Amino acid sequence: MNGLPGSPHRPAPQAARASFEERLRTVAREHYHDRHPFNLRMHAGQLTPDELRRWIRNRFHYQRHIPVKDALITAKLDTPELRRMWLRRIRDHDGDRAGEGGIERWLRLGEAAGIDRALLLDASGVLPGVRLAVDGYVNFCRLRSPLEAVAASLTELSAPDIMRTRIDAFERHYPWIEQGGLTYFRDRQGQGRRDSKEALALVIDGARTAADQDRAVAALTFKCEVLWALLDAIERGGRPGAPA
Image (cartoon, rainbow, N blue to C red; front, side, top):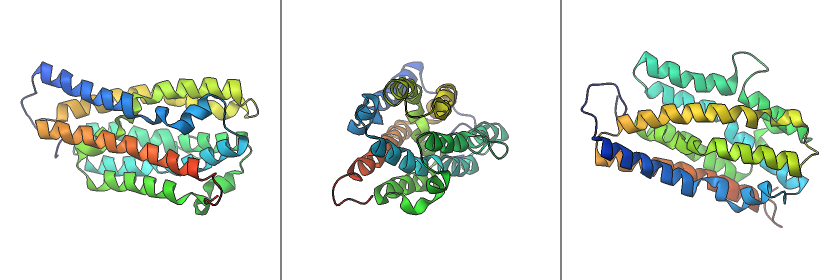
């Protein structure tokens, strides 16, 4: 397997591993989309109901593609142990049966905000910029090395914190959204901590050269840019003359 543990190799010195980990954490900390103006307005309670519904609807297009990109990553992993670990991510979003999983919980968030699930499931209304950002991420996971695809997922290093902030913001500022709709955010706190810990260990062990480390950092940076581009499109979607 190219770029992830799977064959014997000499591990990098501990100091080099620690430096590499800090580079990854710095990207996740400084470039994550929690700093995007749209997210800042959301968490400050400044979004209108229409803006919040537009975010829920368009973000769902990203959510429904998470198991797709994870299936592409799973296909790149060459040991049963790694595949079993990554398959759990697909189950987390798709569930083991109908009515379960993160996608179902996002649909319930939409319903709690007054969006019919048929509208959420209709991808024809997704903003073009959101569609482009999501397609770019899925194709990145399809075409790049296992190391880069896994490294791109390390935005999860910052996900638990933004979920806690989001829960507090929704409870305080958007009480018109039924509390049951926040289950997705609550569940992702624990899942994000577990997933990021596993992926971080894979990337640190798998980046065997300085070039590997640079590619991993670039992959994570790219994923942060995808999430920013998605919010850029959602924010522009409400301007006069912009697509609805």
